[in-house]
Length: 140
Image 1 (tube, rainbow, N blue to C red):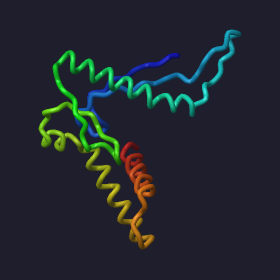
Image 2: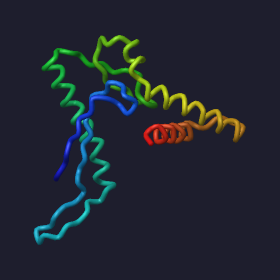
Image 3: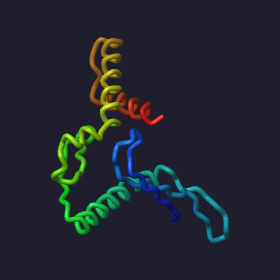
Image 4: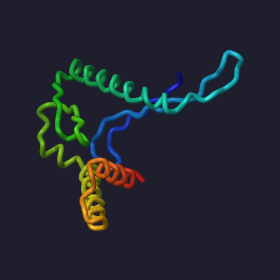
C-alpha cells in the first residue's frame, strides 16, 4: 500500500486545527506487472478504522509527550462526540470555530427554507442532508 500524509495546522477557515490528511493510492500491481484499481467502497470502509487508529495513536502520543488529558465533548455533529484536550477554555474553542459557526448558520438557513417551502420542518435524515449541503458549500 502506498500513502502520503499531509499535516495541516489550521482549518479551511484559518482557525487553529492540527490535523493530517492521508492520501492512499488505490492502485495495486499484480505479480505479472499489470496495474489494477482497488474497489473504492471497500477502501473507504477501512478509512474510518484507520482514522480512528491514527487519532488514538496521536492522542496517546500527546498524553505521553505533553502530559495533557483528553475528554469527550458534545461539540461533534449529531450524536458523535469529539475528543479534545481537557482544560482548554470554552471561550477559546468558540473563538477559533469559524467554520463550524458558518456551517451551522448555513444549515439553519437551509432548514428554514425547507420548512417554508414544504410547510413542515425536515426530518432528522433530511436535516443531516441539509447539513451536508452546507458543509459542501463551505468547502467549495
